[in-house]
Image (tube, rainbow, N blue to C red):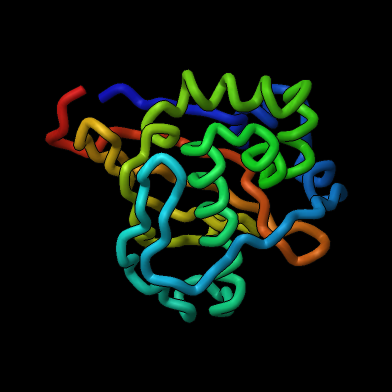
Length: 178
């Protein structure tokens, strides 16, 4: 199975000499796009389907934090499907922003390496986990061709309490054909 990787996962950070301390020292000023609806229209036709509820006790995160995490991911998918470079770039951690020269360069990488996300027709939030201080939000994506993908978003809490995207990995779900 071919895995699509994109916008600087933690492995990229290590490869480019960025330490966890550098990542946490920076603070992003992000708009919180979190909303409470069960179904949200996303530009170009992607719709958020009813998602499984996150189990608060298992992650150590409050319900408000879980919704902020989902809000950041939702905003990223909305920006990608709308081809909104500035919107997609704004939701990144400062370290990842520093890796790209500008929002258009970032969007160019997304459009080639994360095609399933930019071509999303529907998406559904599934499980969420913690890895150290990061949150890992899984999202099932159905693209415009009807293929299903699992997107694993890595998020980091910023100094202002918001959650910013530090990376994403997309893999086609088993049994699907490319």
